[in-house]
Image 1 (spheres, rainbow, N blue to C red):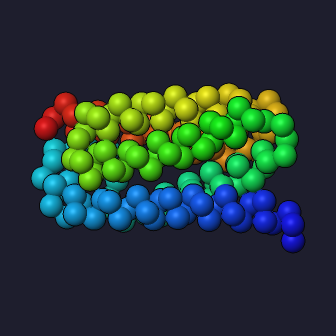
Image 2: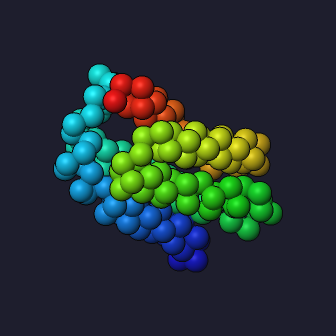
Length: 151
């Protein structure tokens, strides 16, 4: 049971963070975002909550794997990237600021890459859990840039 707890609370924190961020998006998703010119690569709206739920679970599992392994840098990077993840929704949607959102997501890309680099040799499974998140962020960065350049 103790082993499960090291995974449950980080997953719960990620899911709560994602849900909390989504509360800041509601108005913009209804009023502002639909008016923007978006890339043909933009997934349908119903894809986002499904993908993000999976990614948040994987992010929590990655954190669960690195606990107690003397990986302070990775733990710090994990918390910082989670804060940037949350703040992107506020900056892009709540503040309706694609350019500032782009800055936030590019910094987030770097933080997630740094996390991957810091764990890949010490806990391969933590890195594997984070890889889909990194790939999704690259797509999200492109989509953010597209909005910046075409609106």
